[in-house]
Image (cartoon, rainbow, N blue to C red; front, side, top):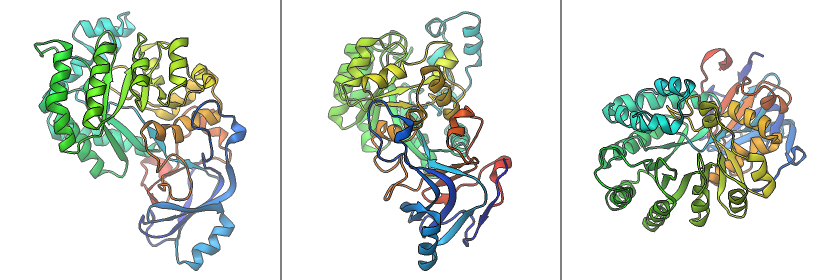
Length: 437
């Protein structure tokens, strides 16, 4: 379906600092008034037919019937971003777990996995994370920034309006700071909101002469205070796994990071269980992966305020089981879905497709899947100003070229947004979907 937009405002993309009426939409999927935890039925979704959205200063001011909002917009001299055709609007998607600041490629790792090597075996042979660390250290700031910006542009064009980006491929003081500076610079160069996370505790670097604990102590003493003083990130992550750090080491590190003033999250239960319990014990915002979580871990996560972040891209990339999203929801957990876009285990980076596939395999309702990439994703990043379309929230909006919201996941990622508004401003989209703007 082609796009035929006719903009009646003086600026074809709309200005974030003026009033603007966007619409009409055949359906507006607000994602309002949904529970933060547990199951969600499709009948709980708030859907406004023939809807419009008024934005002022980059925020949502009013939502409702387009015909009613049209008079208000005219009386106030607002601009119009008129949509001619059938479109479904929903909040901009939020990808809460990515590793898209890196150098090089790991296509060789992928080939070895297909030939029968496991993730841990490849890591022991010099591949895996350490391979990317070496390539990232060798890359210039300009090279890293250029590659990161290209990936961010792809995400924005596909309807991701907020994305978390981790460090973790520097694994020494200077290169971790350098990565975080590149990530911070990218946030100022593109409209997409970038949330940086310090993942210096990705693994103990092979060129560090000391124990895991000594490496973590170095991070706590030297790196994290510099990250805090330079305002490069307010989030810290750690990989708790046999190939990385133990549960006891994770507890030590998270407690120290919290004392310095960081929010914390955990790579947990990817291959072996244990990390999710640490995450919940320390009040982490999220426990991410959970492919190896059993009944005990599911119960612990469900009884906590920690969001369970499922990463289907890693399962697809590694050829392993998905996280038990259905069991987590049935137990009462808050479940988000993220892409885990990284050069090794999850090189695809297509959040919508991955969410649709996970939903099909785990028998999630449409509402549960959509909440996992919007409102519950916002909770995983501790962001209260986005994730739904309601008064006072950021005007981060995406529109799909369809008359029925169910088509979005039914098409399993092949139906992409025809328009993206970031803080009330229409973003130019590449290719044939852009339309006449």
